Image (cartoon, rainbow, N blue to C red; front, side, top):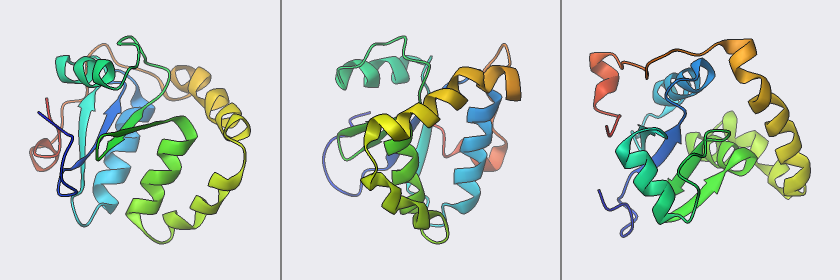
Length: 139
């Protein structure tokens, strides 16, 4: 899949396929994405590793999710805020916090990310999407 190019390209979210919190994020976004602009892939998948490499990121990056929008890569709090903005109100109301320095926003993100398996658990296999969700997953 070539994600660079026209604006009509979907926004790809790369998530940790074993993280229950990440599975919840995917379900959250899908339920609220009325325009169906988001697609998902596991960071651990072949496609996920390829996209990470294309974006100049380490292929073993699991401590963040990655948003690829029109060929641009966003991670951590920046990705989360951009997702909210794309989903619209009320989630877009958080976007002005993008004005905070990234190192401040990312400290909060990292605090949660380091504890996500302990708080939300993890599975030995990637999320198996429901038939309705399957069309939104790229791998």
